[in-house]
Image 1 (tube, rainbow, N blue to C red):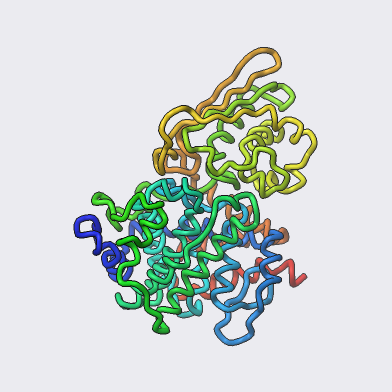
Image 2 (cartoon, one colour; image 1 turned 60 degrees about the vertical axis):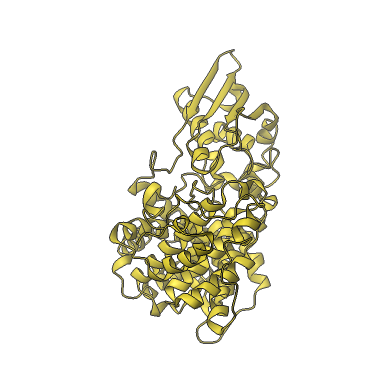
Amino acid sequence: MTLQPGSQPAASATQDLVRFVTSATVDEVVIAQAVPAVLDTLAVTIAGGVEPGLAALQRALEPEARVGAVPSFWSDASYRADDAAMLFGMASHVLDYDDVSMLTVCHPSAPVLSALLAAVPRGQASGRDLLEAFAIGTEVLIRLGQAMGFRHYALGFHATATLGAVGAAAACARLARLDEGRTRHALAIAASMSSGLRKNFGSMVKSLHVGIAAANGLRAVRFAVAGVEGAADPVEREGFLHAFSGGETDLWPAGLTLGEPFAIVEPGFEQKRYPCCYMLHKMIEATLALGREHALALDDVATMRVEMPAGGTKPLIHPAPKSGLNGLFSAPYAVVASLADGRIDLKSFTDAAVLRSEIQARLADVTVVEVAGAAQKGSDLGSAPVTVTLGLRDGRALSRTITASPGSRQDPLTGPQLEAKWLDCLQRAEPSLAREEARALFDEGLSLAGQARIDDWLSRLRSNALRRQAA
């Protein structure tokens, strides 16, 4: 189904979004791309559930014993649906290992899937239902961000959080098969629940943003079903677009279409090779390549310089990180750790790893600059080159430029790499889980579209993640 809000007056943008959510066809090509995105996001969600931030959030939430409560993946407790969505959302993003869309510099899957996992009793949804709702929600999230433009992110908003509430509401409305009227109200409610500041990057609140977005999207649908009504046109006429673009736009762009193609198909979501901010990935790739090719140790290098596109350093707000969470947004740490360890993985972003004296002593030797020019936007930023130059102690200078984003269609994770990521994530949550069992769960997940009930598979994932607590 093709919908082009810009082909009609601005007042039709909300209506076209509503019609897309309620009526768009999700074909087999879209479903095929949704499956690995869901598996990837579930893997990082389960891995993230054992982080300290999740333990803190669980202490703040009240377990729920009533029928219909949603069980946690990491404890025997169950929670109200919106609290479960908040837990799943924070867990999905706390490692910063979830997928990315550079069309609007956001993480599309995490808030949408987190809301869906808590949206309805699991036995009432098929795998196909889940995947269709997931594709609808992520499409709304991404295209709404494109409609606003990069100004939204530049103003200091965390786009995953602000857009995530609306995308999650769209997904949950589709899963619940709401009519157009209730869907419109759900989107209006979610638009007023949108929040999240980039200032909190490098803290627990950054991942909590995703939980809040997932919970608010789910609440918006519940409120709409109960009869709470919102504006008829929350997107346009000094609505969401105007407010969150800082007044830069009030119109849906004429050339921006919903669903043809779905963003999950073209250009596709970018699945992370490294568990940290995506703006670090090209410099990591370049540094690791130089280290391998020239057999370099950190002591061989005197200076390190990173050249990034204009606007590329905005999320990298911790040049002198003092925690693992800070390290997720630190260019100096990414370069120094790549040289020191010859790898970047989940072990790279613990407090102990970041605070090593030999690492801290070299952070000041890294210079990070933005190349002069107009700030890059969205997909332009994703395709812009990043150059790492290492000044060696013997006087030589070595450089490597990376243009293709790791995990993008130009340099994708292979099927075996996605499976390996799944295995590593599940074993992070439960080290005693046999790789054969984890691999069987992955293989079963690949057939998610054909599952009449998703409850059985999700229950097995939960029971495996719970082994630590049961031991």
